[in-house]
Amino acid sequence: MTHNADKITTLLGARPLSADGSHVLPSPMDIVIRGGIIEAIRPAGEAPPEGKVVDASGTLAIPGFINGHHHSHENFHKGRYDRLPLELWMNYVRPAKPLPLTADDVYLRTLVGACQALLSGTTCIVDDFNASPVLDPEHVEAALAAYDDIGIRALLGPTLFDVPFHESVPFVHEECSPETLTSLAPNKVTPVAEYLRLVESLAATRHPRDNRVGVLLAPSAPQRCSDSLLGEVRALADRTGLPVIIHVQETRLQAASAWHQRGKTLFQHLDELGFLAPGTSLIHAVWLTPDDIARIAASGASVQHNPNSNLKLGSGLMPMRALLDAGVNVSLGTDGCGSLESTDMLRVVANTALIHKLRGDDYRHWIGAEEALESATLGGARALGMAEQLGRIATGMRADLVLYRLDAPAFTPLNDPLRQLVFGENGGGIHSVWVEGEQVVADGQLTRLDQRRISQRIDQAMQRLRPAIDAAEEMTETLRPAYERIWSRCQALPLAPGTIAARFDE
Image (cartoon, rainbow, N blue to C red; front, side, top):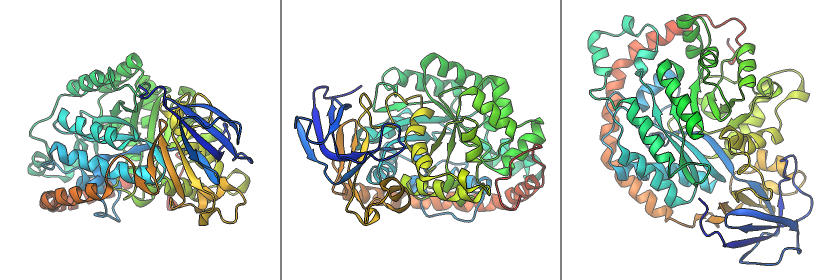
């Protein structure tokens, strides 16, 4: 739903990214925004200075980044973990006993990630929101309210699963005592049907096609979801048109475990279930076979790439070039702040254009700045089924865009502004950030909320929550020896034949 339908803003003299995203236009243009939609793009001086007039001369206009994967529930865990693979790390950020959070804690926790996102040029964020084991609708509403208040575009999905994490890993019953397994089991679990009912009811007033802050479906992963649950999710997505996000084969352990337990990859399993479809994002997708890539391409599903998180957790490097060459859409994301302390998409875009140059000897096929930027903008929109609304600066598109000062150090001297943005800019050159035609960042500050007050309130909340976080980590330490044995045993399992190596030591 677009508010202020008659509100007009005219950005005078910016140099926008071309409609196809391949280059920056050589001449300044005027961008006319009406009711949150780009109404016209005209050569500088041709647009009448209607409504709010902004001098955008000497700026670069880029579609706002779409962060295709974030976990706001990890925002209080910044800086606490390093040198841990995913399967050990998860026990710390999602302890058996959840933290004693209030709705206000959830509101503040959500704001801290959204704040950094906006200030670094992200205009849309996809929040895979862990509300387990007991769903509290007030917590979901608090997170949605945070996104409402700060002005960012957001799609939030309460994480769905019906197989506990510890039951999704091989050898757990061999390596953990009965007492340990009992301690890992939650005392109370909200039935999955309640999660689905909540998302469906929210979709009536918060469908992302029509609302700046909306909902989507977020089944956790195939190994943590029964086939019946996946079928219910697919049916609800088809009925409502909601996007779907799901983690698939992020790590070697997950890929090897699938082959060990099922005799097939998780991509093959999802394909056979009829789960793969346009509007579905396969998060991480690091460990793939050529057959997996062919199945994804044929289905129209997208792959959601989180290179920085995959690096920090040692998960591996997904075969991005092979996916793109097969016609698979790739979006980019930061992942949560427990695995990567930042929601800054500029760092993700830069690393995407850098690290994939380590794969393949033919430099002509390396991932370049243009492809990385497209994945962070239009690729993100395609993944959500919103390519007709987001991801480009063109008439009829929602006015989610970022202006960068071309006199900033990263652009001086100016040779290729697109490459200099991807490889050189750190956010310090941001002139302004716009979401649905509203200026939400000006002069490095949020326009809707007081950043200092947010930080003060978060510090106060953390003083109260830190003892509970410390206690949960102490309990996790007692489980760590068993999980290290499980992890080591799983690492020795073979992968599906033809799996593309995602680590240098594979």
